[in-house]
Image (cartoon, rainbow, N blue to C red; front, side, top):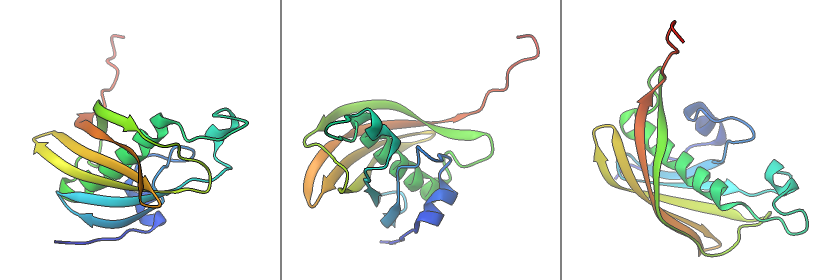
Length: 156
């Protein structure tokens, strides 16, 4: 088992997302081709809390999915280079059995655990779990595909 930890700077160098959509702060451990554990520190000054919700800030479920998806992207990049070659990116293709069990709020440190279920050519399926203080807050399965950028044709 190979265990790799990554700092925020290493995470930022690996992911294509930038502020305000960079949702992984640190990688605790990474076993290429198998599993990643990563951290998202939830702070009250994040832009989504201006409207979700002004009186009681809650991290939207879509952003929890984005965070675990970014952790999966790091795992793929460190496993096989998927989505990191010039002109390629990873696409979230399916969200299955996703459940949001408890609210995630500012001050929480969300730990994300992503485990590979299948790698098939340009596709991957992972099982994800997010916890705060050891309590599961979200879980489900995500499917990804590797795609290339399409340049617009001269005729359009």
